[in-house]
Length: 286
Image 1 (cartoon, rainbow, N blue to C red):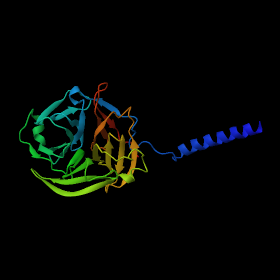
Image 2 (cartoon, one colour):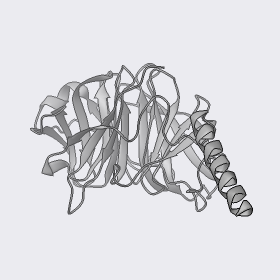
Image 3 (cartoon, one colour):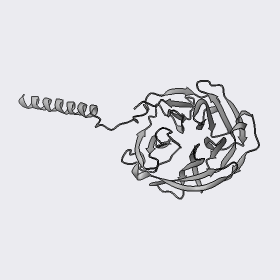
Image 4 (cartoon, rainbow, N blue to C red):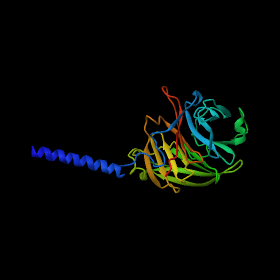
């Protein structure tokens, strides 16, 4: 009987220590402090955007969402919460993965590394033919993530699966956007080994789907649908943390964007049972 009481006392002390540890913040954090990944505002997409991929805002204004999907050469625009959509056709059918709007130009990324650009003012038309194209501009591989920096005019493009990379490294490419030109402006790297201490989901490599810079903190946010991860890096691409994306909330995260207030938006492709959507995560005050 004495030993049973000792065992029960030890169990109580162990449980109490666990509770204290959680309360003191010793337990691993599962969501960023600025965003609650479990409580998004959900915007269901119309059927035309079942396979929504990239999303963007014009100068950070969240009154209109600009989006593409990975089958048609169309840029869609719709108001938050309003399923009625409009679109402009800019190209033939193809695997389009991301979109950025900067310096009053729209830039669309195709999975094979081709880029397409046209004036933002043309987005109000049903179809345009004045599209600048850079076919297979990037090294051979598969690309899904791109971010356009309005302040610098730089485009950051991150490879998803490239021959030059291995499971421990992902290469990114930087281009300076002009009125009708793109000039190489450098490269950057995401060190996959640095993600492993925060998540075990990258043992076979990291396959990014989208990236965006947080306008408030200057940090890079990188989404991976395959790894079901949100990775955060500093301005120099040093990994700061990684957070799992719950499959019940994130069906297939393919795009990410921020509005000028720092609210985060992640787009998800739909499937036979659910519509595509965009999830809004309000930025929490420090």
